[in-house]
Amino acid sequence: MNYDESILELVRTALIVTLKISGPILLAGLVIGLVISILQSVTSIQDQALQFVPKIVVMILVAALTLPWLVNRVVSFTHEMFILH
Image 1 (cartoon, one colour):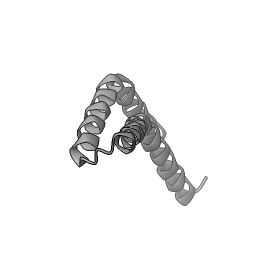
Image 2: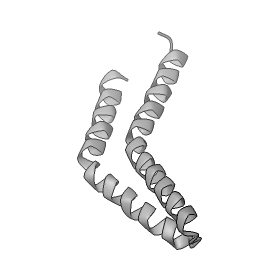
Image 3: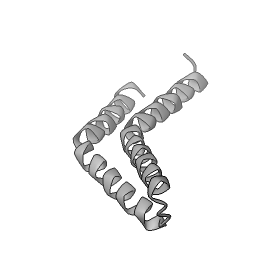
């Protein structure tokens, strides 16, 4: 494996780890946003704060609950990068 392929593999791995780490938080925000949008459509309430505040609260909760897993993934990735490269 030459130098260019090694760099591409490193970037690919970093992007995959980033997607895995951000996935649960973004998915929670997407689900809550969809539920609140449906509730706003049904009740005809169009307040933007009603959508923003619960979404942020749920995303922070999911981030707090998954924090040990997130830190473990980042530490594991960092360890692999220092050992392999």
